Length: 200
Image 1 (cartoon, one colour):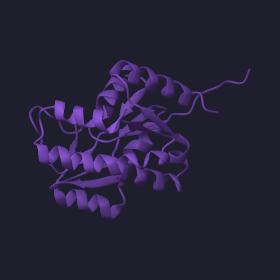
Image 2 (tube, one colour; image 1 turned 180 degrees about the horizontal axis):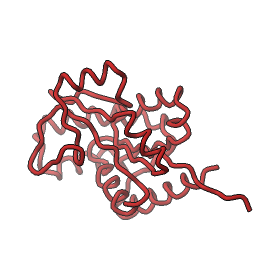
Image 3 (cartoon, one colour; image 1 turned 60 degrees about the vertical axis):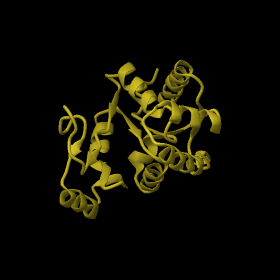
Image 4 (cartoon, one colour; image 1 turned 30 degrees about the vertical axis):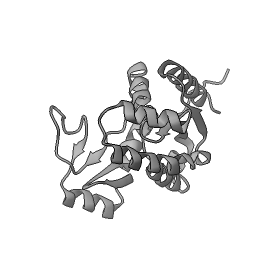
């Protein structure tokens, strides 16, 4: 029997705020610590609390970040309020080359950038598996955002407007997981991951 070694995958997860994607990604990392690595994001914001450089984020100056953009260092990058965030291309390539899987939690714009790069980068194209986490309903999404108790009503409305636009883009992904409860979401994500690992 021919020796079979599954190729590493780049698991890209997107979805609107409140859909549960961050919790889902955290649980996948906890469940498969030897198999899945989180790509550490670069940011221009200052560290918070006990955050460590190179562990939680790579903390860069605005000048260093812009230099990285100009050099084409980032697989994707975005401006969020007054700070910038991005994932280094070389880090993702290095993890994949070592035979480990990479997990990326990105918004729809970041995901579109990764797909664009995948069109001309064979390693990224072969590894990429994209999943959109869809809220069960608009009403449930609003309830989840309101239930957090962390945002003012006008911020919730802004997030809802963004979410409705993002939800229109689910057909751009390989899979669409309609969120239910946390346990069923996690069970289905594990199954999706297992299936992706068995791709020929």
